[in-house]
Length: 218
Ligand SMILES: *Cc1c(COP(=O)(O)O)cnc(C)c1O
Image (cartoon, rainbow, N blue to C red; front, side):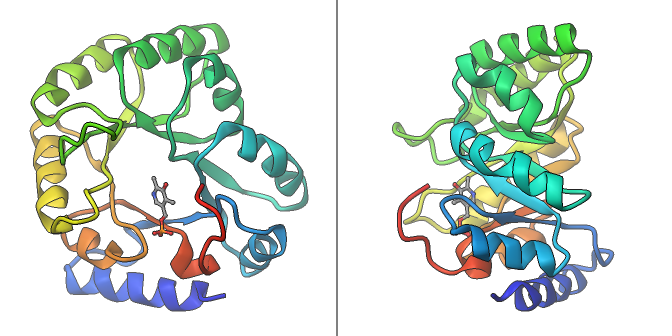
């Protein structure tokens, strides 16, 4: 388990970017990882985790939360509207707000329940057909729409195309966030989180570098 190493690298990246120590949140992405590995990271004192699927998170986190205090779990993967209510109960933040219909559903549920997880709007910075997210050209209007519905938009999230230079996508996401007055930037994974910190990431999502390789895709 290389949580310590990743923490050290993250602190070094913050320092290199001239940012205060601890200014970047490390989300340990525990999707499809065996429970003993997750327990080990909890035992080491880590409390912030990321999951890709509502069902999978519902199957393990209520029990893990009962045994470990102060846990927060963020949803990183696509959210179907029929699972939105369950997501509201399971997650402290949702990083995959990617379409108007989901925004309307979350707004209605937030009204009913009187609370809502923090939200990150997922931007499809590479304009990839198969990838979820709001297109860069439509981001400003969508963010405004979410705010008009009183949704707690904390920031933006992106998953750069694998074959492209991630820095261009991090820079684009940071630019869209800045012009919309958004402080949160969820970007950077195992292979490129230090680069993301240099471009202003506030939340890095690191899975395999902490837990080891996944045997199946999450
Ligand atoms: C799986 C996943 C990660 C973590 O990926 P690693 O390369 O294992 O660090 C981060 N973000 C999202 C959205 C993911 O699905």
